[in-house]
Image (tube, rainbow, N blue to C red; front, side, top):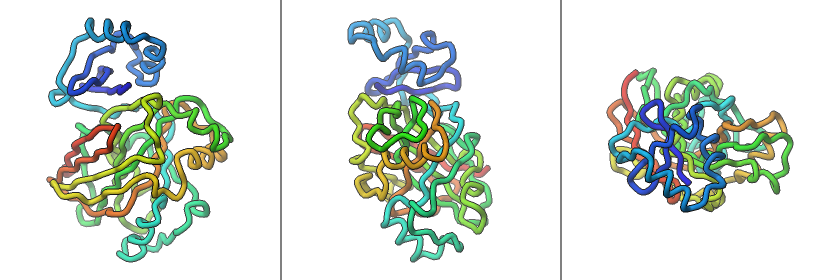
Length: 277
């Protein structure tokens, strides 16, 4: 099932090019609560719900982040070897030379940096290089603390795409990556029971129509399950928390006026515009 938050105050089920407004089912407007409410509905019951719901064309709604209540956004800094190699060769590491995720650990992004595709990126510090980074994101559905990788995926509610926007510089990465609008999630949450294999997701990012990042999560150093095991060993992952699993090679700069299109088979596509803050 695909669940979206839209028009700032509504939640809906995405089917094809349409979204069905089912906000009345969950006054909290929480996507995980909606998934829970729909989990045991039969196909006939779901069809009845859609038949009694207002529908909109996805192209005509404002898509917000599918998650708006994360207690934390956990991110993997160097989870693709090819990205490590490009950072070492292009001089953009600014002294942050790390090559082993197991030694570097994970980092946190401020939940206040999270926005949806239609909100767009409001770029600050135009005198500094700011880069795009496409990532697979896992959303926690059940609290996880010190879980093994064998059980880790049982704690995932679903998956979505993410853009980890990054100002390059000498400051701590959490500081540079937590600017307002610098965590874009979307276009919707795809429930884990849809059969997404997090070890085999083809990610692609276009900037102004040109492919800049094109890779598969099979190239990850640590899998989603291993990342959950790693993260939950340090702190409890709570329902609604987001795990950003790292970006592949092809990272490059963005500027106001750019249009980013992030996509992955099974997860959909989101168009994100870059504006000046």
